Structures are given as C-alpha cells and as structure tokens.
Image (cartoon, rainbow, N blue to C red; front, side):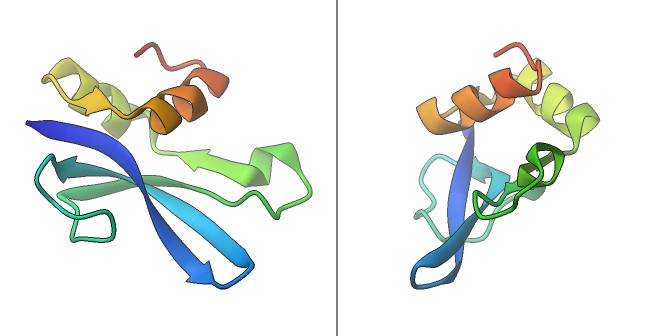
Length: 82
C-alpha cells in the first residue's frame, strides 16, 4: 500500500518536512517513490510554507494512496480532497 506522508529534513531546531509517496513499510526517513512537495514552518510568507505538486498528489490519491493524518491536514489547507 502506498502512503502519502512527511519525512523530516534540516537540522536540529530548524526542521522542515518533505511530502512524499512511500511504500507503507518504509521507515520515516526512507527512500520515497516520489517527492510531492515540502513544508517549511519557519518561512514568513504563507505561500512559501507549503509547496505542493498538486497534479501528482491528485494522481496518487486517485490510484489509492492513503495520506497520513498530518499530510491530510496539510493537503486540506491547499484544497486537495483526501
């Protein structure tokens, strides 16, 4: 099963997250099937905090990928139905 979830990047106290499509058995920071966007909570402008490749996210959702809870919340902020 494919899951859409976040993986942690950055350094201590300055983390950012990458959104990706992962096999459900892959560890948190493992290799994704495809990266779908990023979330950087340290950015000032709201449009720079969350960057999503919307077409690819919609593709993965259409073929049965399940988003994690945190990914689902981020996707709903940009208007992607989960």
